[in-house]
Length: 143
Image (cartoon, rainbow, N blue to C red):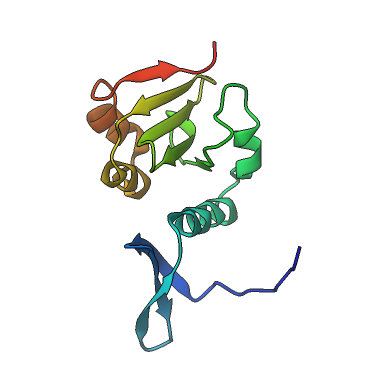
């Protein structure tokens, strides 16, 4: 493993579109928007890093070790009274939610736009109840 020291403190926002990572960089008096080729996983990794650094959330590896969690789906911690973590597979349009009570559910047919809206909302619980619950076929992964 190669280790590099990085300072990401000037990055104020990130986005992902058309296989490019968009970065808004604070240059003091100006904001600069830079696009770099990157897979969606890079965007999700940066969001996970932000969640870990800005909260007391456990690292993603802890969420991925929970019983019933699909090991192939990276789980991102969420600040919510309803869930601990969420994950998404864009190829299968599969959303996975690990609820506060420990239950893990998968929701089929969830489009990537809905996934991004879930990540961007101020209230994941409200968004989930309004946009996902009852709108997609679901199955519980653990008992």
